[in-house]
Image (cartoon, rainbow, N blue to C red; front, side):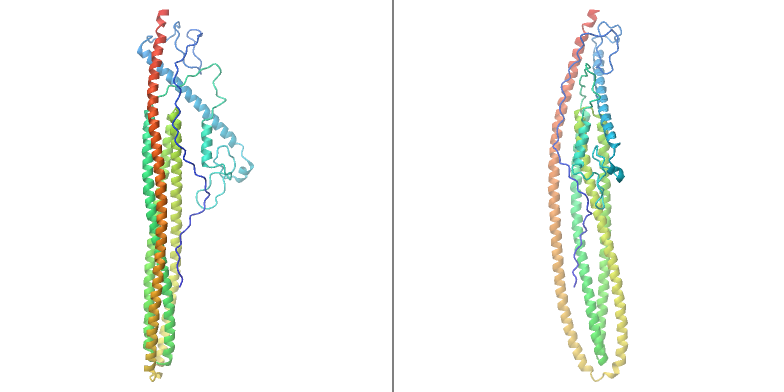
Amino acid sequence: MRIAMSRVPRPPAQRQEPDEPEEPFRPPTPRPPVEPPELPASEGEPGAPPAATEAPQLPSPAGPSTPAAAPGSAAADMAAVHQVAADRVAADRVSRDRAAADTAAADGAAEQAPSPASAAAGGARCAYPGCTRPAAPAEGPGRPPAYCDDPAHNRLAAYRRRRELAHRPAGTNTPATGTTRPAPIPRPLAAGRARAEELAGQVQALAGELTSTLEAFGRQMALLGDITAAEAQVEAAEADAAERVAEAVARAVRAEQHARAATAARAEADAVAAEAVTALDDAEARLRAAETARADAVEEAAAAVRAATAAADAAHADADTAVAAADAQAQAAVDAAHRDATARIAEAHADAEARLAEATAARDQALADLATARRDGERDARQRTELRAERDALREDIRAERAEALRLRQAADADTQRLRAEATADLDRLRAETAAEITRIRAEAAADVERARAAAAAETERIRAEAEARLDTERRTAAERLAVLGEARAEARARAERAERQADDLAAELRALRTPGPRGT
C-alpha cells in the first residue's frame, strides 16, 4: 500500500534584498528667527532699480520715484511685508530649482558614460544613483532584481544616496559675494497639519487592512491544509481500491480454476465475480468523489488567485495614490516641514512596495497551487482510464470463464457437495482476512489523517503567532509615528505663532523706519 504524502509547493526562488530599517521619525529643524532687513549706509542714486539677487530695498526718503502709497499707513506696511515675503519665497524656490538642476546634470553625466559591462549587457541598469553596471540576472520567476551584484547597492543605500544628493548644496549657484539674502518668512502650517492628520489616518487604515489580510491568509492556509488532507485520503482510498481489485481478480482466478474441476464451484465463482464488480463500482464512486473534491480544490485555488490579484491591484493603486500625493506635497512645501513630509511619504511608498511584493508572491503561490491541482487532476484522469480498462478486461475474462464453467457443469456432478463445502470455507476465511485487512488499513489511514491534521494545525498556529507578532510591531511603530506627528504638530503650531509675531514685529519696524521720511522732506 502506497501512502500519499501531502505536497506543499514551494515559492519560486528570488533574490533577497536587505530590508530598509525603520528609522525613528525626526522632527524638522526649526529655522532661525527672521531678522528685519538693514538699510545700507550708502544708497545708490534715487530711483535706481535694485539688483536681481538682492533683497528688495526700502524706498529712500529722498527718492522722487517712491510709490504713491501714504507713508506710515497700515496698507503700505502690509503691502511691504507681503512683498518681502514673496521675494524671499521666490529666492528660495530659485535656489532649490538650481540645486535640483545640478543634481540632475550630475546624474545625466554619470549615465552618459556607461561601463563596457553595461554596454555589452544591453539590459536594465542598476537603480543606485550614479551606478552604470547592469542589474543582476534573475534567479527564477518573479520580479527581476533592480540592483547590480554589489552588495552595497540596495534599496536602503539608494534611498540614502538620493536624499544626500537632494540636500547637497549647489556650489556653482552660490550668490555673489556682498549680496545678502534674508531668510524667508515661514508661512502658516495649516496645510502641513492637515497633511499630517491625513497621513495618520492612512497609517491606521493600512494597519487595519494588514490585520484583515493576515486573518484571510490564516484562513486560506487552514483551508489548504484541509485540502491536502482530503487529497491524502482520496489517494489512500484509490490505493485501497486498487489493492482490493487485485485481490478480487486473484480470488476470481482461483474460483474459476475450481470451477473447471467441478460445476458446483460455479455459484461461488459468481459470488466472487459479484464481489469484484461491487468493488469496482465502489472504486468508481470513490473516483467520482475524488473528482468532485479536485474540482472544489481547483475552484478554491482560482478564488485564491483572484483574491491575491485583487489585493495586489489594491496595493498598487494605494501606492500610486500615495506617490501622487507625495509629489503634490513636494511641489507645494517650501520649508523643513516639507522635507520631513517627503521622507514620511517615501517610507509609506516603501511599505506599499513591500505589501505589493507580498501580494505578488501570494498570487504566484496561488498560481503554483492551481497548476499543481491541474496536474494532479490530469494524473487522476489517467489512473481512472487505466482502472476502467482493467475493469473491462476483467469483465471479459469473467464472461469467458462463465462460458467455460457452463461447458464443464455436466462433468462435475459427483464433486458438487465437497467442492461447495471447501469453497464456502475458503470464502469465509477470505472474508475474515479481508475484513481484518480493511480494519487495519482504515486504522492506518485514520492515524495518517490525524498526523496530517496535527501538522497543519501546528503550522497554522505558527503562522498566526508570527502574524500577531508582526502586527504588534506594526502597531507599536504606528503609535510611535503618531506620537512624533503630535510633537511635530505642536512644534508647527509654535512656529506658526512665532512667524506671526515676527511678521508683526517686522511691520512695526517698517512703520518705525518710514515715519521720519516726511519730516526730512
